[in-house]
Length: 225
Image (cartoon, rainbow, N blue to C red; front, side, top):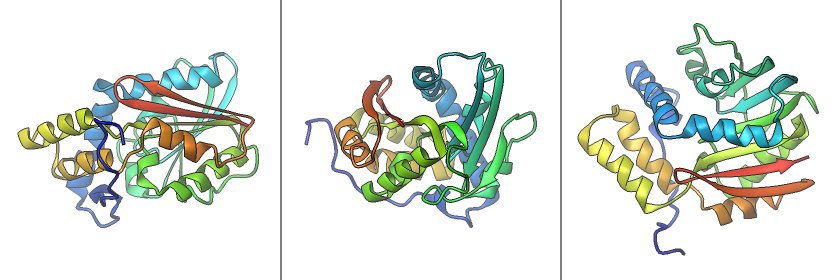
């Protein structure tokens, strides 16, 4: 195990619970949007997508798994002919802050995607991979490649002591909500290293596999069909 990498611990996250109090759930979803905006999540999502879909003028269908409020899909306003579909298992996440969003919303299970073969150009997920065990992630990647014509793109926070220290400090200072104070450290502890993510990706039949380091303390996993 690398020096600055804690042991992976599968710690439950409160936002995954369907009976979380509505006010706490909504605050946590707003926290996640701020993390994407100010801590690099949106930029990483867009940069990785450009590796697989560089032409922003072409017709493009993207399905984002674990989309939450679909803020990452809504960041793609410069893609001129985009059909964006956000999928999440929790309908409450999809319905929150949906006004003004151009993303379609679908409730579904990532291990059994409710889409036909080749329904999308690209299937993405962001800050979603850590929720699942390695064998579950391999299943999800296989489903993503079944649905995608080009490929699948995953990005998530790397398991590392630096982001863990940052989110624990934010929790101690109470600059995030009650659920995020539990879930942000838990998501780091449940996360994967780049090598672990690459190993999971290698279990899936893909024409090409690429695992990349993304700033700050994120990784990208790209699988071409």
